[in-house]
Image: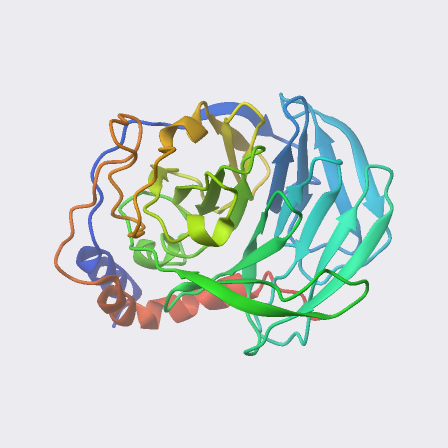
Length: 340
């Protein structure tokens, strides 16, 4: 089947998403040639912290709110494939060295990088084989949760069985899964059918008070209520979907202390975009039973995306039909992986 025909068929059979009201607003543009593969983002309200996918040493770029570089934090540690980042209240930047496109790693790692460039390595091992994970969710107690990137099934959520140990490894336990439905939000790599790109988890974040959990795909963000700070419980609830249209390779998401949601894409010259008051879109009295991609949002909320109009075909069917073209898209993503 020709690429164009298979792509059109896969998208046609995927659920169609209705229009939305909450549009991201451009905050600033990242024109720094050294930040061309943006994969992790964090904010303390006055500064942003950005890191690239891959690299030969740990590097975090400290940016002003208008995207100007103020300084860099570096450490000579050579990571395998950094895919996300979280910042805890003590200022530590947690870099998720968890990328594994080739499914070759015996362990993955977290690097705890202090503002003065000191780092501690924590290795982690999966209980059920290798996974590629691009989302890190850090709860208020400092417990990391990794969310895998799955093109043919539900994303899996893992957290350590016990306290982190350096260098480890500490075994991970699977504690949840999240099954997204495809959407019609434009964006994502052109090499991947939208029906697939809109279900691949590419980043995660937790609000500063721990009460809202966010996961993103190449095209949309999903906000979950976590009134007690429990990430696993939050991911079992119905989320609010926030479309993030026209990001060519969106892999970053972060919260500011005031509840503003920040997102960004790989590529020099791409903007950092903001959605003010994003945490307010999520109900403090959440509904049980998550059905991502088909969310009507919090009760009475006019900013969340309306419910998806389902075409009658389940996402898995669109996935199967688009599999041939997806293999080419996955090969494209695989080029980003390192061979170390």
